[in-house]
Image 1 (cartoon, helix red, strand yellow):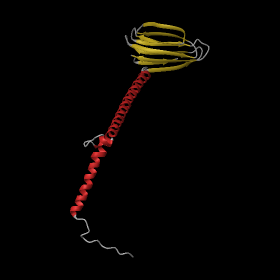
Image 2 (tube, rainbow, N blue to C red):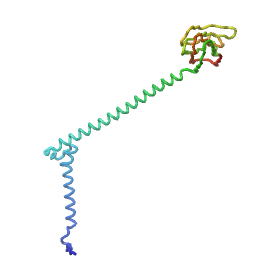
Image 3 (cartoon, one colour):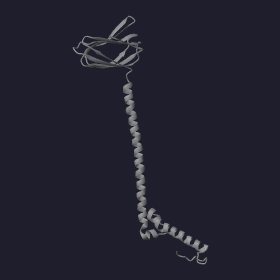
Image 4 (spheres, rainbow, N blue to C red):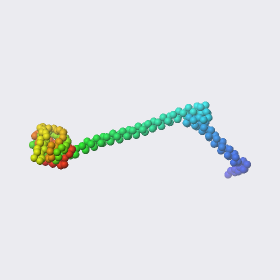
Length: 207
């Protein structure tokens, strides 16, 4: 076991000495901060010591690099936001276009006709009503008669022979039923798809 001599009170530092040591340490830290750290890290040289030691230039370079990096980040962020906005706008336009395309036709009628079979479709319309249509024929050619009747009146708008499809519009000449009569004069089964939109109150189908 070792015995250590307990220091006397006279050997301990006084409060004034402790304060002076603390003050000197703080002053040294401030001096190092002002003379070395600020010039080397931020290019700030209030004492001129940084320029003498070559630290100020190094700090200025660091500051410039940091500013450039921040500008690049801001530019990238802005470009990203703009790109996101443009992408969103493009998606909106494309989605709207698809919605308009898919919703353009009020009714879609599809039917299949074997050789010799017929099909009839009529729209109930008032005088001056307009209905647009698109007819698509797959698997062969078809004959059709686009006509109207009502109130003792009748009219033939158009006739087709060996048609593979067409599009147009019906402008009702008078109140009544306006539409198509199809007959498959081909020797094979075919499919007809008719898209319709416009002003009409009823749609009558028949074979």
